[in-house]
Amino acid sequence: MGAAGEAVYNKEFDRVVTRFGVQHTYTYDKNNYDDGQISVQKKQHLRIGRSRGKISTLQYSLGTGLKIFTTENNTESKTHLANNTVVTLLFPLAKKWNVNYALMYQPTMPTLSMLSPVTQSSNDRVFYTGNPSLKPSNWLYNRAWIRFNNNKGMTWSFWLKYGRTFNPMV
Image (tube, rainbow, N blue to C red; front, side, top):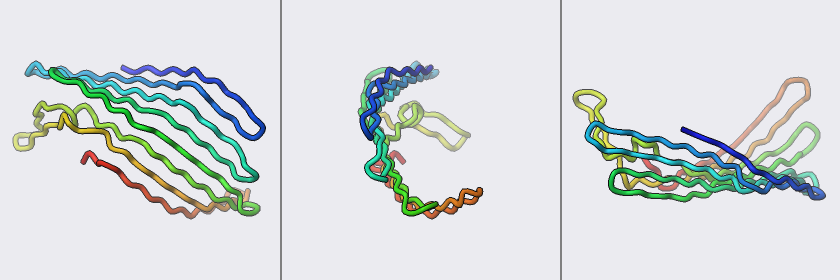
């Protein structure tokens, strides 16, 4: 089950457009197992605000939000909060050339089967069980690229990217 809603206020300043408000996404999953165990997972994503604008020729965008992640089984419930931020920059170098940069800091939430203590089999020899103590990991992603566009349908790009996962689940 899932639902989404948005209540936003836009405000334009001289060179900045801001969006304040809440963009909310909610999902709910529930598994009933043959041995009587029940696992529930609730995910919420709240986007709090975004701002985009221009300083001289540099264009920027900044967005931030919060992910709330709750899991429950027959005996316990855990809630995790995680920041979700995205920053992008665009700078024109010369006619037809520009430089872009993106930074993303986002949580990766475990799936319900990764958290379930119930043993599941995939065949006669392989059995899986989750880890109820598993926590969300955080992903940091950076990408910088140079782009050339000749306005006749040909674009060249060269980019460098670096990503790192903190507290990986696997």
